[in-house]
Amino acid sequence: MTDTSDQRRGATPPGALRNPKIDAAIERAVELGDPDELLALLDRSSGLPARRGGGRAPGPDLGPNAPLPRVNLDLARAVGGAIADRGARAERLVRALCSSAEEYALIVAAQALAALAGRAGQAGRQESAGGAARAGRPRRARGAFDPLEELEQLAEDPRRLVRDGVVAALRTVIAARGDAMVGELSTWTDGYLQAHAALEALAERTLLTRLGTGAEVVERLEEAFALADRSPRADERLQGLRLLRRDMPAQIATLSGRFPEVVRWLEEKTRVERPESREVVGQAIAALRKGSFSDAETARLADALAATAPPPRDPSRIVQGTRKRSRGRR
Image 1: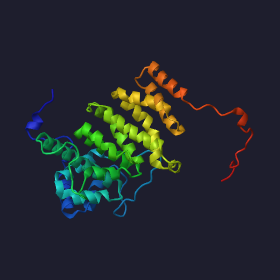
Image 2 (image 1 turned 180 degrees about the vertical axis):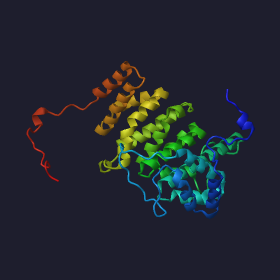
Image 3 (image 1 turned 135 degrees about the vertical axis):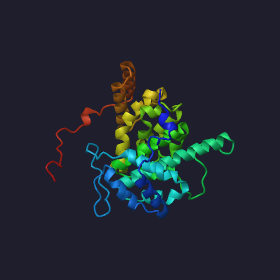
Image 4 (image 1 turned 45 degrees about the vertical axis):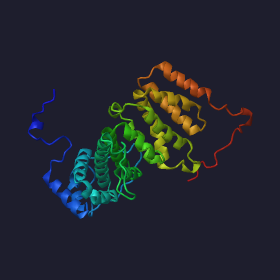
C-alpha cells in the first residue's frame, strides 16, 4: 500500500520542479519571452555537451548506431511542466524555445507542449461532460497557438535527440488523453518523420495498456504504411522514409502484442506488391516470431507472404557475366 504521508504534508509531486533558482529563471523567461538565461542555467544538468560562445550549434545525426549523450529528460519534463503552469503567459516563451536551434531547448519545448496539450484535452473532456463541447482537440481561432500542431512541427527535426524528446512528449499526451489522442494522430501520418514519431510513441507496452480499442491504432498504422508504400521513388533517400520503414516492423510487433486486430491487418498486407513494403511485412513477421507469438501463427503469415511473391525472372533472359562498371571508381 502506498504511503500517503508525504502527500498529506504537501510534498512536491513526482516530476515537479524542485529548484527555486530554475523556477525564478522560468518566471523571468516568461516575462521577457527570452529563454537564453534559462537555457544557460539548465546547461550543466542537461546531459548534453557544454555550450560554447553562448550557444550550441545543431549537431549532426550520426546514424542509428552512434552513441548519444544521456539527456536529462526528467529535468526537461519538470521545466516543461513548470512553463505550462504559467498558462497563456508562457506562450511567447514556448514559441521562442520552438524556434531555437539548440537540442535541449527543443526537448524542453516538447515537454511544455505536451503538458499544455494534456491539460487542454482534460479541459475539453470536462466541457464535453457538461454538454458544452465535443471531446477532443478544443476549437481554436484561426492562427491561435495549438500545442499539438507545434509538437508535430518539432517532429520534423532530423536530429535523433530531438525526435526522442518529441516521442517522449507525445507519449505523455497519449497517456493523458487516451484513445481520443490516438484519433488525433491522423494529422501526423501524412509526413514521414511525423508518422515515425506517432508509431514510435504508440509502440510502448505500458502505454498500450491504457488504450481501450485497437481500431484507431490500426488506422494510424494503415496510414503510415500507405504513406511509405505509395511514396515516389525520388523519396527513397529521404531520412524520414528510411526511418519509417526501418522501425515499423518492431512497432508492428509491439502493437500486435496488445491488439489482435493488428495481426489481421498484417495478414492483409502480405498481398502488397512493392518490394520495399514486402520487406517491411517480412521483417514484421520475423519480429513476431521473436516475440510471444506461436510458430504456427507466424508460419501462416510467412506462407501467405510467400504465396504472393512475384514469380522469379526467366533464367534464359538473365545476362551472365555482366561486370559492374563502377568497380574501382572513386
